[in-house]
Length: 337
Image (cartoon, rainbow, N blue to C red; front, side):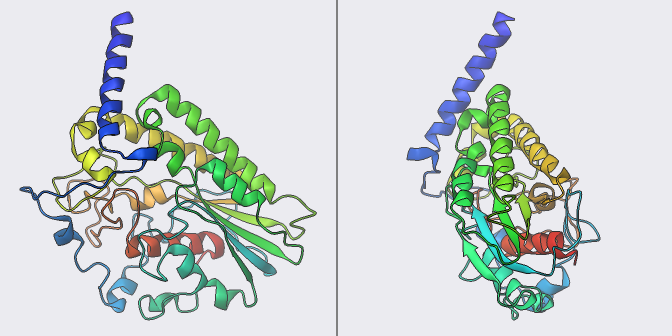
């Protein structure tokens, strides 16, 4: 037993040290000079995805990891919210803030106002046209943990004139910013409990009948996996930030543990979909096969009709296509269309 615990400690210490070398202050990925290697380049694989003709993109909007209905939603209730929606609130982290998306193409921006030229099949599917006169509240901020997002929720304005929709992206920074949470099952369990507890408090915040008399529908997003379930990355040059760490020995040493712990975290988030006021959009499941192994036809999650990359080059954030897919999944979760 002592030998196994010592080995576990050595592996964890090694992993922590290697991860620390790949991160800057505050747990944020450190930018490093890229060196060309024998593999394909990120630019080669990702080239043209954002510039694809609108008709091409529109033709595959419903073809993803999500199946025939175009969405992966774990919820007890998938009926559209009441017609009296008067406020939509955006809470969360860098994903919710549209980090790395081009102007107007983060999922929140697209939910408010669709780019009809880029996504013609969504010309009538945005809040501005579906919910005329609705009030938009954006409190998302890059780097936010679930504790921060709880504060965002508590600081949101009251809505006593109708129903409220609240969209929440949170949990990724709780996991990614705590190195031990990624590789140590004990610490990972602590983080899971913290994330779930804070998400419950966020949802409960909008059950206050004095502040949200018309009730609220909460949409929670699970956390995506850029490695497509493998815990490592192929030999691509042009990747930045945390990608460089995963490409090294860390991916081989602890990548499997990180994937296992991330799946367990997302499973806890999905359980909240049993609440009648919560819809859970499974980003994790929908994005499998669209991470950095997207071109690998041997993957169980490989999509022959759409083997495209939905991430930017830092292993944490999404490109425009990825943000569109999140918007699409959220819209389906809310309106079943």
